[in-house]
Length: 192
Image (tube, rainbow, N blue to C red; front, side, top):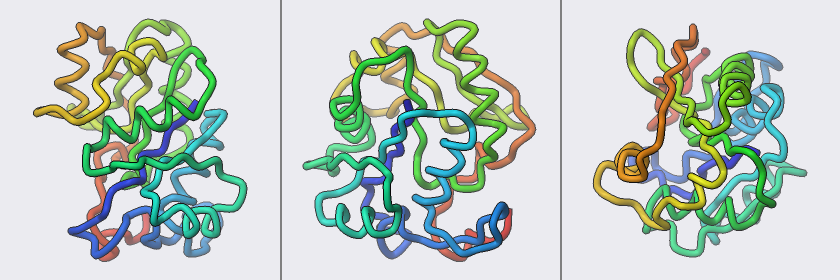
């Protein structure tokens, strides 16, 4: 499964990052970050795909990405881990979950495919991408581990929660700078 984390307010971006636009290299059309991330996850082999949004963004997300399953984080101020929890609660249990922040729209589908293949070879291990020696996103978590994580952010975020849980993490080197490209505003959303 894939849970797209899209419940942030996007204060630095001037609004929710899910609805910022960029040129999709596949189609050449302008698309929202949310639509692009959903397509990358789908084309990379993730299924089902679900986006977690703020309550006030549900209708906009449904209109912007017809057919994409949505879940609502009723209290997104509790942070990213609360959005992950909302996504997990809306899906049936499976082997693992690709945790895909909506602010990484420049990722390539082949990178998702590589992450999922690496996870399939050892489904008890977290798989995290790296580019040029630096860790990035998205990550693939074993389902049971994801369900055991706190339902609200802790200091140090997901990385700290994984360390506290004693998770085994495998780093997969990929040739995709998109794993590091956290988009904070529309000016950064140029061609990939």
